[in-house]
View 1 (spheres, helix red, strand yellow):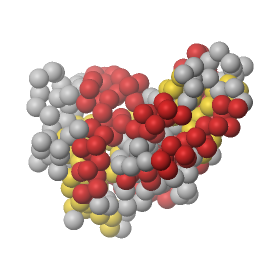
View 2 (cartoon, helix red, strand yellow):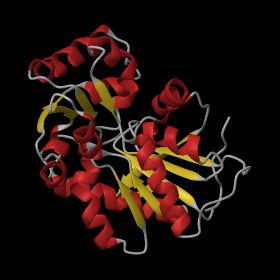
View 3 (cartoon, one colour):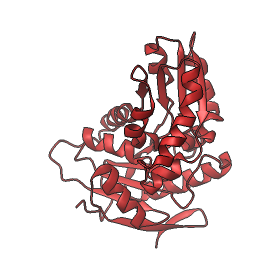
View 4 (spheres, helix red, strand yellow):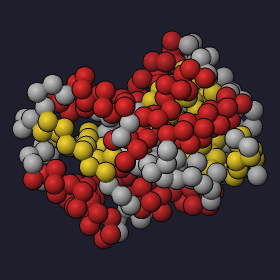
Length: 279
């Protein structure tokens, strides 16, 4: 069972998401840097972020960043596509001393490998309406048609750990059907919750459709940033990871075991006037 860190440790990677979806990025970070200390915040009291206004998401992101800084994080991974779309630039302006790694829809690699010239994107409403998504498509999708689809209800199903339910498969079939009908042969997962749906998604998609999700690329970029700041620890360090949730910690513990096969304690934290405090 992973024990939480009791004191801030140099080189701690801060990671946050609206809920447990960012654990797909944590999984990749642990595989690449198993000894690097890590502090994760799930703001599941406010999950999902997708329907929320940008100003509200920015305020949440700033409060979480202050909490992660207090626990030793000089590098913060915004492991949420919606939060990255709304808050990445404001975070960099507000905290210039902190390096931020954000989630960018993987349009570039998808455009490079599509044979049909049609790329599908599954994401939340907040991600698809953000200027970041629009800029990425405009920059990288030359000669490629990008079709996006907001899938309502999937985030909540992943949060509950019920990814194999018939309801999940039904929602996924409904989401991808219009994309497949228009010739999509590469599907981009634009939400960190969605990689946990891969077993069900593989049942829904035809064999020729490739799926791209960016967690490994984000882990590699995080390692580069840590190395540039001389914060990368050598191999053989004991695992020191802290998990915290603004909502139900018991639910997050269950999800940690389901998705990461990790038994870990989860601290309960709560919002108070824009700051996060231990409960």
